[in-house]
Image (cartoon, rainbow, N blue to C red; front, top):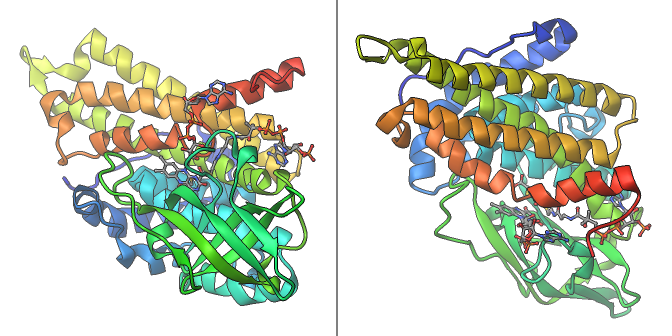
Length: 392
Ligand code: TGC
Ligand code: FAD
């Protein structure tokens, strides 16, 4: 990839809405991405390899558990700092942000919120430092948008539980040390189960041939009569609301992350358009290209404002699931549109790995599907404003 010349757009001087701490945290993440992610990410994506070398750096910038209390190894930051870290990481690559999202909001969050003190002490510090990597198993081959229909199950055997079933499309599965798995008990109630690598009957085959999110490893989780010690059940919340609560936190991070991908595409296209001469002048001087660029910065600015406000609401514990859905849906859609337009501004160069845009487009095809599809989030908004569910 060409040298990383990224300059973040801030058209409405939104930095003035941030505290000194937000800016420090954001700038540290921004510098780290420039130094450690940009130089290696294109090759990692081309080779479809998760770049394990970045794990310790992710931990150092506070990307593993940004809002988890410091007593458990987290960074103890607020929700806006969490969002800004996700924005900067996804500016580099959505797959790297995925790793941070899963670790923080889908693994550390449920252990922190739904686990007991022994579980918190055992797992959280190791997850925060990157010594352990985790994954989150909700989706099944036959249950994606409808996770409540899951068939993965646990059976009480007296001294232990027996876990059977399978999960699919699980980020980080191939190398995760611990999996937070959602399974139904004999009463049909969904429980969180901590499954550790090495448990007999537990395997994690990798999913190959992805055209998207190639720098993130995806796999299955297969449970064939896995003996689960009773202390590995998350005791403090059950039902579908437990995994959905984790999704609120991860979807919020994605809303910020998508802005990062969009900013990178816009910035790349703007720089290219100013330099690329056709018909005797820079293409940035052509009305059609200006329309694209002007619409991009308008949409980025609207998304920045929406997301900052959502962060304030989350800091005050007032953000609703439906508000988070709106931001995830809007921002990912905004980013994928900007990426496609930016790609066109670069002409043929836009399809090469010399620039990040094509990789962002392909990544965003996963981001618009996972953590609730574009359509599911629209239905969540529809249900919220009408009071009528259109899912079934
Ligand atoms: P529904 O009847 O609406 O709700 C069931 C129960 O859950 C409660 N609830 C929530 N609780 C906490 N937080 C939320 N956000 C909640 N949303 C709902 C609800 O009150 C109810 O509680 P109770 O006590 O009455 O039982 O459920 P439904 O079966 O109709 O489904 C609703 C629907 C479709 C919105 C939901 O299931 C959904 O969001 N589907 C999308 C699935 C999804 O997002 N999967 C993501 C998998 S993880 C992933 O993709 C990780 S990618 C990570 C990466 O690499 O970055
Ligand atoms: P389906 O649910 O089969 O949906 C197919 C289509 O039907 C979609 O367009 C959808 O919008 C539409 N649809 C579904 N229901 C309705 C309805 N009621 N009304 C109207 N339209 C509807 N899952 C995890 O648990 N953990 C992970 O770590 C994880 N990582 C992922 C990583 C990647 C790279 C990808 C691609 C996915 C990952 N997922 C993960 C799975 C992801 O959450 C699901 O793919 C997603 O929830 C959609 O499920 P599905 O693919 O089965 O699609």
